[in-house]
Amino acid sequence: INKVASIKQLLFPPNHTQFLINNIRLLMRTLSISILDEDLQHTLSFFQKLQAKRGGLNILASHQDAFRCFIETFPTILFLSPDNHISPILNFLQHIGIPAHRIPNIVLAFPPILLSNLQLLQTRLKALNQIDGVDEDYAKLMLKYPWVLSPSIQNNYKEVLAFLYSAKIPKTRIDRAIKKQPQLLGCSTSKMKLMVDQFAELGVQRKKLDQVITKSPQLLLQRPEDFLQDSVLDEARTFKEGSCIYGTHISCSTWVQHKRGSEAKNRISGEHNEEAIKRCGGVP
Image (cartoon, rainbow, N blue to C red; front, top):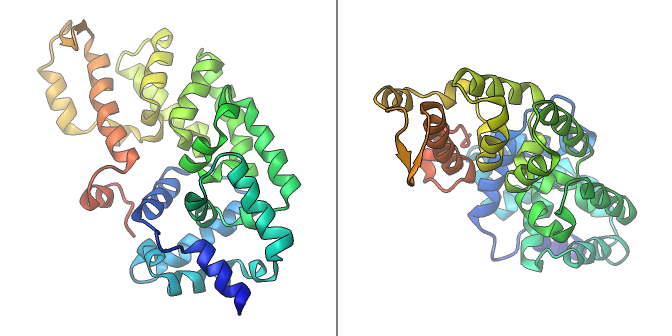
């Protein structure tokens, strides 16, 4: 009984906020890779169970109901030793810079992190060093994208890197885009290709593509049909070539990219109100 109470307190502390729920919606909405490892499959299964219930992911705010679903999906957590297993994992997360009060957000968003052995987590963390500069702040990346320690996500980094590198985007800029928008790690290259092709149709030259990706990486997470919404296209029809944004003369294609990038950033960041989240398909 004491173990159950301590685990429940770890996952659902009094300062639990809406931030976790919004972040999980974002994680699920932007995931498009087809091959998922067992850890990620179980994680999605947990969230899908919640979504199938009345209230959807908002159940996470109801500690009793959420904990019941959590244990149903990850029953082996009850057999973990608090002193020999759970505490070392928590110490590891704090050691890499994650504040104690934010650890529940990491664990609930990616429960297998609590089931993994410490050596495996350390190995997966070191694998992130492939991304330039990430070793300076592991915590920032993990808080933005808790699934980053998933084998499937780490393997997809190689696919994303190869695809964007083939599009003549330097690795330093690719890594910069990933640190800015880590959801790219869960995006399939086939989906990215659709957007890259859309940029080409808008007249974005290949040599300028790296600038678009670096400044607005969230655009790669969109679908072409969402990118080219009527409201933006209507404005584009009245746009004059050589007009200015912040004093800089730009082309029509660059203007569209600027407009859509701003809108996409607002949607992806989750800063809109509940209605905006619903329009993005985030509320079950």
